[in-house]
Length: 632
Image (cartoon, rainbow, N blue to C red; front, top):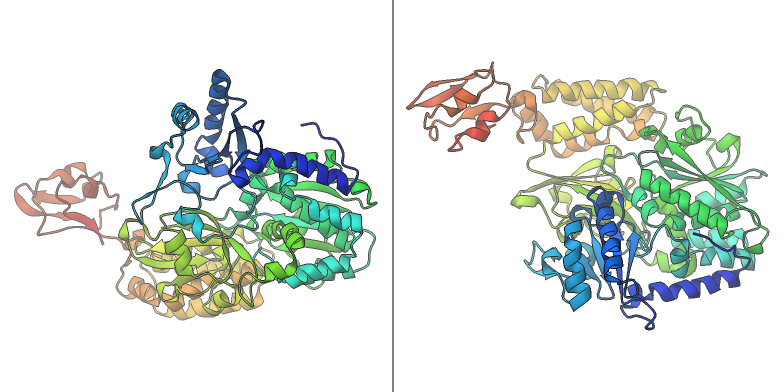
């Protein structure tokens, strides 16, 4: 893409007006004039849909359009993630906003013949609501989207993330242009961010405007702006999706932040495991440079700002800002004591402002619409919206953005569609490895920083994992401890050794070798680790243990006293048994058992499983013709 540098705010506005004509179809539902293509087909090109062949669908669409000479009537575009990841590949057809799911390359002919050629919707590719049983054609009709409010995700699924002009068409870089042209005092901008009530979305929830104010207040010729895109929580993909679907919202915010604190250089620290996000960041930075929105003398204002990418190697601890700073500088990613905070001593011992991707993505729209507008959304303690990665035992998995103050029940049942196969809800883990497991009794808890902390969990960066009756809460605690213990940098003893001891106790309990004294030892050790660890990883690592001990202690007791896993998950406590009443003594189980653990005589039920030999492979359960064999 060849781009002509913009010299002023007027140039930016002119480009916005010109480009807006081309995408008005997606926003208004009607073409502006006859020269505008009649249909825009948006192909989800996020990681989820790409992995399920969405780019093959796009290639087939473009090939068939050339053959049919549809170029004047139809345009095909890449977009970022729509959020409904379970249903990919996803196509959205404008102007009628038809939402097609599970589209494969072989479906392209039918879409072009029926929808484009005849104006008839291809019903078999529409979403079928499990709640109402009805076909739902548009995003507005689909339950998953109804209660969402997309601010950070406002452009994901709307624009082509690899075309800067489409971002500009939707007011992109307007806030930056007006700030630089009017030479708005940095303190006025910071005051507006403070007025919005925006808090950091990376986990700690520190007031964003206050952080900007601190960084601006420290003197120094060299300062830095840092974007934390090192998203390490299991099951989390919020930041990745924003970078894949709307990278310029982050770039614009970082440039504005640089102007506010007096920085000329910024870095985006992103996981190397996010190749699509990295590629789109590189494209976005290159296009912004070509247009003169990055580099020297931006829009003729005299302000200069440069931006580069640094790749992380997947260390969870580098999500902690001081460890991240060490890694950006090419050193081992280890945290250091605070104070001094990075706003005073950060990159190369210079003042550094660090926010995460989602936090930055909110900034341009806050500055365009006003801090008061944003503060009007959410709760008194927690303003605006929050992006969550909804996963686990839930019908509708995917990425959602909801207003603060919505309840867990609304997210799980109204947006998420409830628990699959009619199973019972057991718990939801918020905050990833740093959060806690919330039981059914707290489903009506409102999602905000204060409410989640009061019930032993936390907002975190936005992972939201749902668990049902088939999940063992002791094993869940063990899983998270295994993760944090493995990811500990090892710098401080409480975290390095303490998490190892916690994990050993949990492994004993899940293997059926625990003692009741272990429960008190777990609690004491958890509090010691929280109090003495150097950084947030160690300080929050015990949370999954403490929350499961509080709400699911009965499961720990069952593992210890009854030597039984109520959910039938912990392998060391499982027993495969044959029902005396159902067994027909056919002998199939004995014939297929790989270790000869089953004995009996044909036609003389029941057969018997020798527990000291059984390896619990489940082969006999699968082959039993009458369902007489089960795990307990």
